[in-house]
Length: 322
Image (cartoon, rainbow, N blue to C red):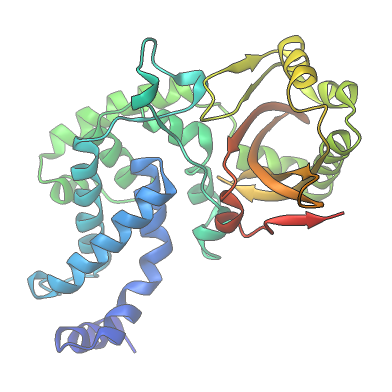
């Protein structure tokens, strides 16, 4: 059934037709809200609220073109409203000096499985942690203009229409946004890095990294790190740079415990579900999601999101038996 027929049925009150009308855009819209808000949970809430508004306001859609831009107008406006009263999302290495820790909102990871099978390389690049973290340093409207223009492919005129502003204002905002992103994102994306390495090499790296943790072999682990590698663990504010700092932290922190690591994907990057042995449970329990950046076959960055609930979103088990 084509879009026009589904639209007519939806306008007549057929909620099933409405669901079929918006379903092809659901994954893309959720990823858009995540880029804007830096939080999977906020993105899902914004998406659901946007779809409710689309359903109740369907009569205002003129139907003279595809429904996609209209849905993005609703979702973007909802995100802008939320951003008006929320602080930007942070990673420990980007934390603003003097920021009251009680008021800090942390950037959250994004499971690759939510991107949907139709997501291309560029869409996966645009949920990488470095990109989403860089977006947090833009104003809300600059963020919206850049994502709509350069991630989603709307023209400058379409972006101006969606945001209710002028083409000149859009282009001016895009110039600054591009400068900020150029300063804060690596030249080579993780998607490009992983493609260049190939699946076999990436698997071998993941296996070696996991094996070092399983064996509590700090020397093997540090040997895999780039010279200026970084390691952070939101919501803890401490973070470490360089092999010596990371080694010292590992020895006094997590390394004495027993671990199991399961490779997965998040934010378009190599990731691991990490499990720590719990005597009282007689099993390894999910402890964190580690999102890893690779550079020249070395680990250049680890962001370990400390949350015992992330296994559900990533699609991993809660426990691993002995």
